[in-house]
Length: 632
Image (cartoon, rainbow, N blue to C red; front, side, top):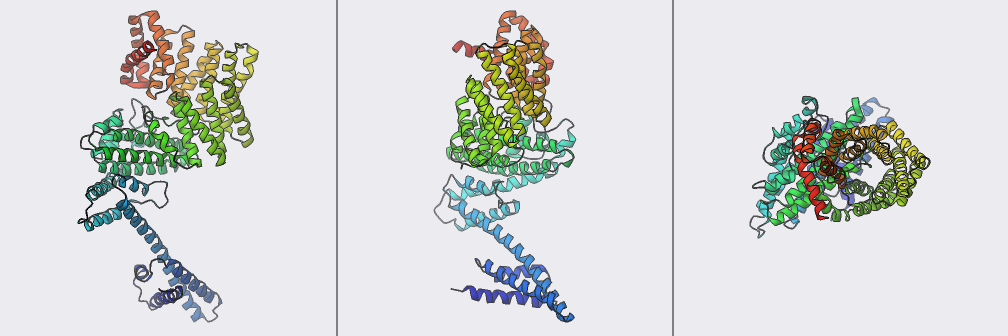
């Protein structure tokens, strides 16, 4: 066994030799130094070499500083520059060795993994949250290493290895190729489509998807076309003929690369940092939602084997979780929003059931608390109150442990809203008061705005429950709501503004002051539209319909009710039944023929918000509501 002392002697000699040939003018390039290091330094002895180099550098620096003779000082200076060149190549050597080590580790882990787990093992090495994740160059080297390993093991009795590795390496090549085709078009859509302000879906804006679809092939092309056509991604994947694991690998590389590049670009927009932040949020939410759709699609893909369906759907879940983890670490993470924000289709509804159990296995960290907060908001919108309570209560405990006070305050506020939905007004008031006290102690203005709104709203509903709707008992409650609105307006937080407008509007509807409620609810619609929160947008429309109905404004009632019903149903929110019930009552009062004429009268305004397909789908939704009433 070679001792550390002998390695020191050897490395001192190596350093001196490189300095000597440098001083003699025999060094052709820095690459020559690098190759010497590769040849001479043995694995596991890097610290010894680094110590030797550091000692030589210090000694030589002292010689430069203390030499009296100019000739000796000049020689020492040249020696110092030579050692600094060695130091530069040593740093390069360490990085290369680290990359090589990561590639070798990935290769060994993938080959050692059981059949059915190799793709998800690979996914861990491209996780965007890992500092040492494999970049494109490293992935290319991994492909070569895996191909060679498969060739070397060709004679071994492992029938699943070769086809699985070939699917993986083929998918890596395709993914890199697809992204490289999109690099020059990454943000071109922002400039080419004047109305394209982000990823949010509208009937007239397709964002980047159409442009990207024109530049790629295979499954990515079909994915982008499906989004452009506003169809179900999950259904498109289910029906994809000859779908293979390599297609999933290609999508992982492509989608991760697009997400990383877009967020980096949006975050660097100094001319409008708020716009950049909004688009970064939209990017994270959009790609998270796409992974949810892909999860559902791969889980049921007819052209895949049962084992592949299980492995690739699990891979989609892990990719989703990686996206949410990265998002949770950003300063602009929306503690008061849901995962369906800025999206116009039901991306997550079915996936939440699938996410529940795996999330319990994630360590109790700050990121988990924030992910649970996001999912809890969505669960409340879906009417899954008990599940939402469990998400937020767990998030609250984790946030306290992690000392994440904004997250703690947010979960107190969310719990208050859930208790309101369950008509548990005492707990709603209790949690909103706790949130308000803590928010003011910690200077969390956004949390304070939401707490004031929740407290005022809770007081209004509690007063109605106790039949104490006199002006005196409601004055303080409305005051809280107005304070929350003023604060949210000052902060410029559109989502909180929408919640405040909505709560004030509902309060005035309850107080039988519809004329006062309408302006607040209309502003709530606009604020929700700007924030991209379809849930709040739909809620504001639903109560706007109630206010217009109280004033016997039939056409305005129908318009708001149609939009509220459709938007809330699109994201699976239980409250879609409220405007549907109002429309059903109207239909019964005025007759089917007059009701259909009324629907046609508001057609242009409805189409402007939800498109022709949405307008055509309204009778079906109303029929679904009536059918469900018949079963109750």
